[in-house]
Image (cartoon, rainbow, N blue to C red; front, side, top):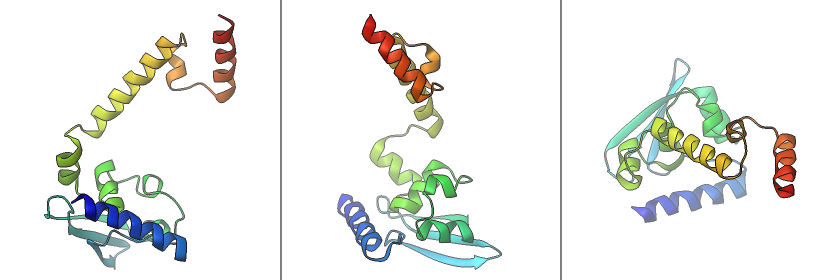
Length: 146
């Protein structure tokens, strides 16, 4: 399992270095375009089960030509489906390896952690999410003066 994930990552890096383009993980294939969409599917590297997602053909072309990240180009997909395109690991496989937290649970945990850090550093809660770099710098200077 982990050997396939590493092999996919190394093959992708090699392709990017030599061609300036991304590739889909070797366990995935494409069908289409059909009416402006492409189906990307294959057997999950972890579970071996068939999984697929449907994306806009122009978004896939931009992704493969390194004109943006999956998170930017496939906003209409869940984080789990984007991960399938990136690594060839289905949501079920990802959760099997890394746990069963949902995207919403992870975001809530990250927000709580950011607030803890802001509180521990005597920063306003706003600092956890909305301060500009200049505001952070000013707060850091004030904190050093304490």
